[in-house]
Structure formats: C-alpha cells, structure tokens
Image (cartoon, rainbow, N blue to C red; front, side, top):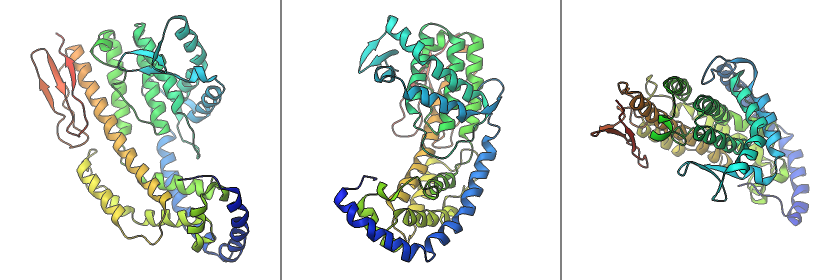
Length: 384
C-alpha cells in the first residue's frame, strides 16, 4: 500500500502539495477534522489504558513497573544480534530448533540460548509488570516471540517443566500485550504433558484460565481505529511516505493522504454502532453472527474512499478472528491437561459456535475438534 516516491514525481508534486496545503488545509478542513476526532480518540485510549494499567499476569502476582519499558529493552537487544542468532526457530512438528530447515542442537543450541537469555529475561520482567499500557507506534516484536519459542521448546525437551510452563505463560502474556497470536498447541501434546509434574499441570491450567479471561474481553474495534488515527495525527506518515497515486487521489484534502484517511476513519467511527454486541454473554455473538455484522459494516455507504481505512478495519476483524482461534487452542489444551491428570473433562464452549466444544470419546482417548472450517482434530490419551 505504501511506497516511496519516484524522484521526478517528487520534484513536481511537492510544490503542488505545498500550494494546496496553504490554500485548502490552512482554510480549516484539516484542522477542523483533526479537532473533531481528537476527543473520541483520547477517550478510547483512556478506556483501553484503564484496563491495562493493572493487567493480571498469567501466573503469580503482578509486580510494579511498565511492561513496555522492558519490552523496549528486549527489542533493542534483539536488534543488535547477528543474523544467525535471529534466524533460529522452533519446529513444533519435529520438536527441534532449526535454521533454514536444518536442526540446531548441541553446543550450537546452548550458545544460541545463552545469547538470547538477557532478552528473554527482559520479556519475563515485562510480562510480570502490572502496567501493560502500550505506547503508540509499531513495535516489531514478532522476532522476539520466535526466540521465546526456542527456549520454551528446549526447556520442555530438557524436562525442566516448571521453568518451561512459567516461561510459556509469560510468553502468552507478552503476546497478548503486543496483539500477537497465542497458539497453545505449538508446544504441548501428549508427550510433553507426560513430562510435566501434577503441580506443573495445575499451574498451566490455572494460567490458561487467566489468559482466557483476557481473550474474552469484549471486542473493541474502536481501539484499532483510534490507534490508526493517533498515528496519523502524530505525523508518523510523512508526505513522501505515500505513493504518488495516493497523493493525487487526495486532491480534495489538499493532496494530503493523511487528511483523507482521517476523514475515512472518522466515518468508520460513526458506523461503529453496526458492530455493537448483540448479547451480553462472553461468547456472543457467534462467529457467524459477528461475520454478518462486519459485512453490514463494510457495506455501509461511505463518502470517503480510503484503502488505509479499509486495511485498518480488516486488521480489527482479523484480531477478533485470532482471539477465537486462540481460545479454541487454549480450551483444547485444557481438555488435554484433564486427560493427563485423570480428572473429569471440563465442559467448554466452542468460541466459533457458542455451543459445547465437540469431544468424541474413543477407547483410550478423546478427540477434540472445533466446528470452524480449518480446525484440526486433536487427540488426547486418557490416563488412569
């Protein structure tokens, strides 16, 4: 969507934009628009910040401090690593660390883990901090999550269950803080659960329930819109960051795409009642009902065309879908923990349908499979 200027067009377009901005934006539409949406953006940020000012960690008690101060240190440390140290990933199918498909093991893996240890310590301190308010801007922390995956997998392989469970729960807290996907089945299957003590299994299940509470918070697409508006208002996108076609398309806005996208996001905000929850239950609306709401929202008439606004809306919907997948994986793992402990199986809801999560009993196992297309069956052995 966003590309750099071609220099000949830059030379021609900048004078045009400067004149247009002086004549049109200075006359008021830009400043009036910015002023009209600042209030709801600040109100949305305040509501979201209030929920995260005292965020519950996935295990133990929260500690004083700001999570993203620690995450910022982790990001800087990770950015300074050589490419070889940032290219190791965990293969969840083979249960080994790999680089470009080749297994990393022995002394090489130990050196890799030692290199990442200070970074992961920062992530754990952040996950334990009570204040999880996220500053504006792009954080680019996904590569840090890959480093966490390698360490969790290695700890489980070393039969260090308590350390593995606690680090994985901190990883989940970190991912939710950063808006990343939580995949509860990437590390845990029958074999890994069998290597955990009963105390570790209980702590894992309790942590999953804490994570679930966060995922069940009502969807708030306004937060995504407000964050995008804040980036535009803060000038994160300079004039030269936009493609020349986007600049020309913003002729009604002084050739400033930022103003055009602000106007489009303002319209999106006005249409938010179309996305209001239809029932108070934590799993309502169902995925089908929510999908119908989003389709009605996208089909609503708009006066301002903006690919940027459409991308923000799609991201908001994708975040809701990711939360449902995360819930499905978490609840599937909770059933697996009960199987391993020989405990009664919990009756949990399918986050896609709102009905009970389908569990098929076999002679010595149960099979869990959500109703959503693409959901894979997960088989858990029944232990005495």
